[in-house]
Length: 390
Image 1 (cartoon, rainbow, N blue to C red):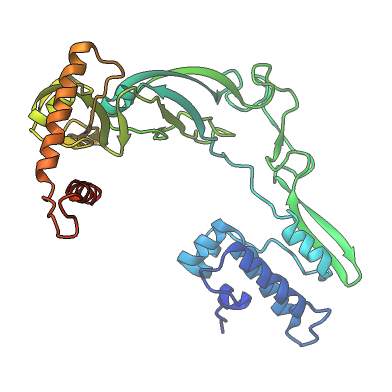
Image 2 (cartoon, rainbow, N blue to C red; image 1 turned 45 degrees about the vertical axis):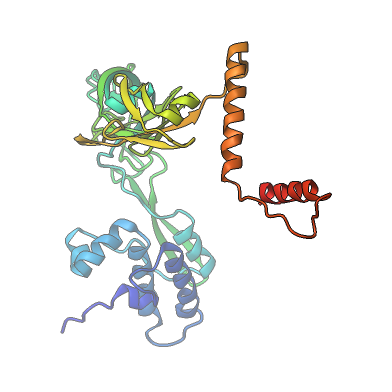
């Protein structure tokens, strides 16, 4: 009769959403309770092995993902075997925690490994970010060494099988404890897990199988990009070890500021000073946009700080060539620092007229009996002060 394996999450007593720290804490707690030194039940050894197997799977992101999708059968189908061998005895807890948490696990390095991603920063003018452009970039990345065909060995020599691990990339280490032997599988220290060593290294790459090379590419910057936008160029990063696939190249954009315009999402914002008379009487003004000058109408009585919206003169939406933001133009009254004689006379006359208009709008003061004939003027000025201050 075949016994169905227990769920690894139930063994550790954690939920399926548990993070790495929660899984580690649960294992430590359970290991102390289940260890045969402290647990004298008949099933202590089986429970301890089960616990170690559960932690080994759930603490490894790749194994955990396979287990979550396909269960125990998924792991067996991929050749998974428990990493720790307790057939010759159980280690004490200090050795156990050291092996599990101290980097004793083996990571396969025999096969190809993907190369690293790279990053390049480029500067763009404000207009280039808005409307898009093409840029030439230069970067250095690792490429396969041609003379040795990426093996790292001199032409005609080839790599040799590691004599320490016999090409397996891992070695078994047995430790004697007071309760028996503890066998642990670790990365081979001679070949660093690759399974092979370079006796006669290639002169071109010095045994690495890869070498740095400077490359030039022309990239297309789409319209609408902004500060910090990343463009991914697939396969232009470092090539991988043992002819592994290359990483990607990320181009990070840095956009320079503009003297007139500021950007807020896909809208542009600007300020424009215009003279007082245009705000009062109305008129037309010419304004700058990122493409060409444009004329807008200023209605009579426009207030200082009013914002005009010019539709479709902002930034194109990224990946939407026909959709654009707006240009928001704030108008501010222009106040000259110096005026000539004629301007001063006109302004003084305008000031007098304006004051008369203000006085006309004030409520008329009423004379009371208390003011009397002699105090009429005093009472009148008092009413003016009250009206002016209200």
